[in-house]
Image 1 (spheres, helix red, strand yellow):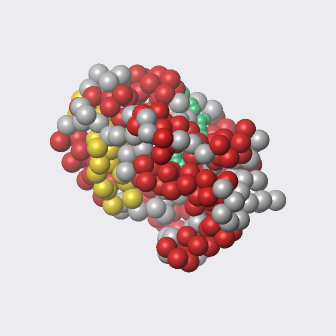
Image 2: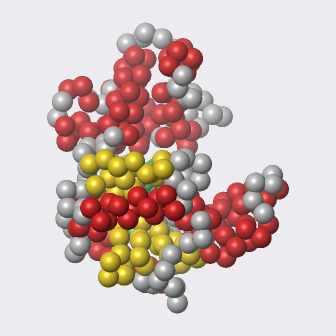
Image 3: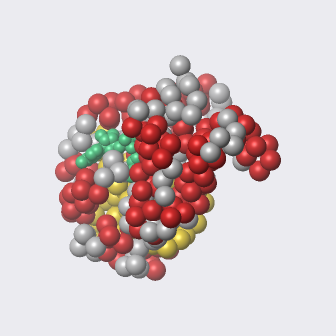
Length: 285
Ligand SMILES: NC(=O)c1ccc[n+]([C@@H]2O[C@H](COP(=O)([O-])OP(=O)(O)OC[C@H]3O[C@@H](n4cnc5c(N)ncnc54)[C@H](O)[C@@H]3O)[C@@H](O)[C@H]2O)c1
């Protein structure tokens, strides 16, 4: 049975969940990972092992540490097998009904003072907190992709989140080598409230025929010192994800300036979702 100290359970073993579990395991936590689809667990395990093996080859991690990290990762096919945990992070598909159902079950696997967190990019933490028994111990732990490389955890406080939960969450993020920055729950939090309208504006700029995609991105990388242009970044994130977040911000803030660009809608309707579909503003064939 899982121990109850220095443990974490991650629900959802996709892009984000597997990265979160890996980072915790590398920092000495026993990390239990559950996904509703066993193939996601198989793929997570293969990807994490490959990354660790490559890190050993490059001399960034010792073989002993890589083996120990692998030993601390537990891939479970039934949610009930995650045991009782002081921290459960939900990192499943960005759909409200899926998350609410997961949280109902996950809260039964918390220690009496355990923290339940969501990695959601756009769903209200306050709204999710209202569906669980202890909203004061519910919080947003917004990791960034790729999780092992990105330093930031945006710690999002819902209206009901207690000071103690917020403080403990910051300490946990620091314990796994991340920099935690706090904000209050509001549509898009800080990160996507600023990033997504910038990407949306870049798409309006393209739509208005001001410049070609490469020129728009070159102006932003070379002139603004951004590591990547907004259109290339949109392709990396996924245009469907960008549209979904803009729709949430537009709906919840209700101002015209957040209106999703029609060209963004058109690309998503055409299945040009960016890198994952091999075509977005750029081609990845
Ligand atoms: N991808 C990003 O750049 C990014 C960045 C920050 C936050 N997020 C957020 O992280 C969360 C996960 O995103 P992702 O990109 O990893 O998605 P993903 O599609 O790669 O992974 C989601 C996983 O959830 C699993 N899942 C679906 N229903 C489930 C259920 N009922 N129980 C358990 N697992 C279930 C799926 O099988 C899949 O493996 C979302 O809330 C998203 O908004 C994503």
